[in-house]
Length: 400
Figure 1 (cartoon, rainbow, N blue to C red):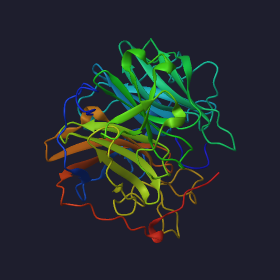
Figure 2 (cartoon, one colour; figure 1 turned 90 degrees about the horizontal axis):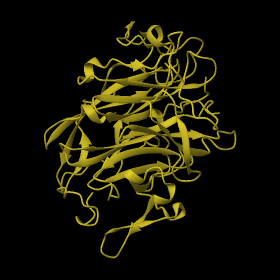
Figure 3 (spheres, rainbow, N blue to C red; figure 1 turned 90 degrees about the vertical axis):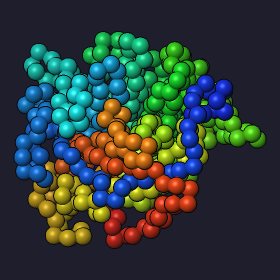
């Protein structure tokens, strides 16, 4: 088991990108009190709720505990990519899917071996131990493409990302090319028009987010990727063939895991990522992939939104007496929220307000939960309240 909570992301002046215009003039923020846990998605028993889970992933597929859970859609399936998973020897990653159209009734399915255990995600030729995980995926045509992190060392967490492809619905994968050793180690992927947009973070939990794009039909060619290099004098995005020319979308060098989705009811891109300052899950929004992105807003505060002591373990002495639902032999190890991955299929609502769902890892218990949040648009004069860091609310997490 890992020693800290890891693993674990258009209008181009119309004709340039060939995409419809989005209305402007508003940011997005959460409706107060709407961010909450729906249910525990993985494992067999939800200790905080003191009840069995609906999915029973341990009994059904040997998935006893896991983290992450980034997702992508294809046809009637939503695929989930889980990180270092307990239930097989070593740190083995896991793929699952659901065909449920109701987020309250997600049933995870797995590719199983002859012993009834999940088939680990395996890419020949790369390391896939702890901290080496499937970051994000996308379906293009009949193939599934997944970005994996690898080359974890004591000196550098997640040193390289690799693009791999499966042509048998995720049973087996083959390596295509190294995606990045710099600014696109953890990624979020989004298809829009003919393009695949790649949002990436570099140094783990110590970098801001950069952007790249590639024509979907050219995804298997690394030389077809172009990196966002800033705006020109007319305010239009410029694209470079060099990753070194990629510029951050905003300055907040704390990003590791991230997700991005276009919230069609609100006509805004929404980005989620875990943050150390402010501590919790940060949300930003933008009209276009390259921004301008809104100021950071704390979507999920693990204290304010009843995480600690409710479904994230709070040891005794840290902001209270502690709770009793920790993992075995981990009573003194605090949990922490990370891996906020939007599930695009379940977004619903109107132009004024919509509901989104996302997976969230809690570290202790080492499981993935389903979360929901109601978002609304704010007018140009309705500014988000500033974030004030409160050291008393920053419950420390484990370090290496």
